[in-house]
Image (cartoon, rainbow over all chains, first blue to last red; front, side, top):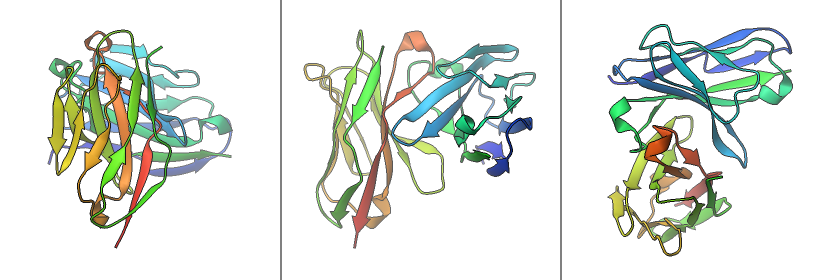
Length: 115
Length: 113
């Protein structure tokens, strides 16, 4: 089954404790991206990757890191989480040829709470 | 910058009622427009799209028409079902942005039986 898999789905942590949210897709997509969803703000892009070893900042990259060492994986790293990073996070992927078509495939989301 | 504005929710309807969710956009140019749907506990799914002015996107009984003159892409359905209860997001995208989507804030739809 074609899917984008995120882990963990739910996490409660404390300020400053490094964490990683993993994302894996099995569709051989070149493009992957992370969004955060906050009430009243919709989804905002954190980072994206057009292909292996190619990453770039989105609209709200502060406090986050990413890496793209393999095509299928795109982990989101919070080196020192803070309470303002409490949010619902989504990973998404697509073929690069879908540029501008908007057809992203989303994971089920990871709800993160930072105390 | 580019932005999308949706009507605030929640929208509460009875089954078989007519649905309209308003969406307008601000952009320098002519983006592609989309509606995504998020069912409870799930990720977003593409519902429909339109890539140029006057195009109509349709899927699962939902429709939206790309109106360049009013910069709008309102979502409509003639008869909603309880299973349509979800959060609906309007979004835009430019070829120049690659695969980046700019989302509206989302509108919660609740359908009562």
